[in-house]
Length: 598
Ligand code: ADP
Ligand code: MG
Picture 1 (cartoon, rainbow, N blue to C red):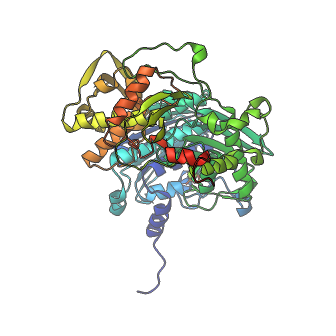
Picture 2 (picture 1 turned 180 degrees about the vertical axis):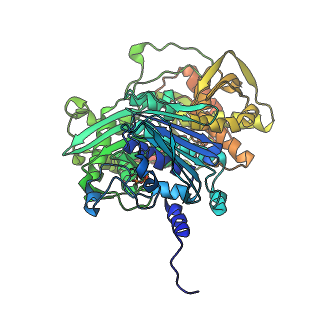
Picture 3 (picture 1 turned 180 degrees about the horizontal axis):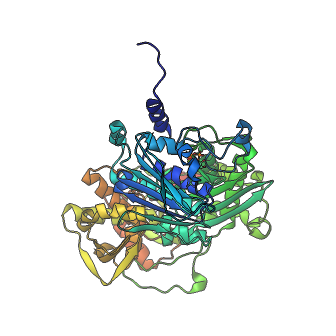
């Protein structure tokens, strides 16, 4: 074939391929345009997961009628003149490509009016071809309608994921932008219901609740850190709140949502030794740095950036987060007994500073122990902790992952977190949370296998409102929940009513159970029913299990040991972590120099 120049239509479809990958990318580009136009309010409507319709309306500055045709042409932008400006850019857009790209793969209508014009104008673009401009009466601002996305690129349509997944991507995007711009009003609807609405009053925590649910939002720690023109704000989860994947790590740099491996690493390093292996925090962080410090022109969808001084950014982020984590001390939370034995714990006896503080114990000597204290990385405990942990672990024999456990004699509870017991062959330290997780899981799975999970009606049904993305998942799982003894019904937008729950969990919070069921749900999770069910069971048991830091009565401790002894796999929790550590008589003798002294 001879070499030919591509036709403009083909060229722009190829270009569109880089920028417009899925409905959420359209929403992102349009949102960014609205924000660039100084909008105070942005209204987004998405129908059929964005395949039928995406409409973004704003009250921004608008596009003058005579520029409308230019706006939908490739490489036409009002945001950049010289290439040198790329390094001092303060707008989100600058490539002049979004509208043209969208117009080449959909039926696009742009309606806009500027302040000093009486009338607005409307332009339609179909598969890249623009129609004639028409005058229309409209308010100041811009409305962009994108219909039948990818109607002329069937291959793209085939690459889209399920409607649920595509919708979730859009929900997640809009919610994160709302969080990044708390001073703007956002409204997202799906044709029937309002999925998200923010007030624009600047309150980030309220928006955080829309993203993660009220429970989680309340627990998130606020970050505010500033150094030499760098600023980091936002929220991170305490160490007690984790997920099984990195999907909840959100970074904005100068108002732009980016995916940056090094920022994620800085964040995770700040949590080093504070989290279990395989667990990840949640974070929504907003980094502001001088525009000259970052090159934003390295990715077609502007989703990646390059730093002029990556080490500086890395250590600033890591330090800021570590400082916030250390300044935080968890408030113990005594949940209702899960054994049906009610107990009152006098306030002063409540365990304090369990868990996290053990891992970071010596940081209490920090001046004032407050968030403002300056901690430099040399003082960080990570490494010292690391070494002491590893030298200890050479002394204790980790449990093998299978096999039953011998009869144990309870000695007591330490740190309101571990049970101490004696067996025929030495000392056992049992993690009460992991052990209880295992017990609940096996009971639930046994009942499940016998197709008989006793369900108990709640005296008063509980209404639970979930973040939109979780609500969408839950709707698809209602029948699975039924098998598990949950009676849950839809009860208005994003709201569910729990009428009954497994008798096994009676006495604990039904809304926590429901949230546990959906919070870690993987995107397009395996449709294999058995796998889903075991996973759901493990998740909900984890949430319902007694926590570290919860003082237990002697009866409760004994019941826990007995139940654990009865388990098929008592040595690990359903997530594979050990429930116990065994210090054998043999090993104790060696350590005390009674036998074969080193
Ligand atoms: P870019 O944002 O990179 O400049 P776009 O193709 O997204 O490129 O938009 C082209 C131009 O159209 C923008 O530079 C801007 O002048 C104008 N424009 C697009 N959307 C809006 C909007 N919502 N409000 C005002 N002007 C807009
Ligand atoms: Mg743009």
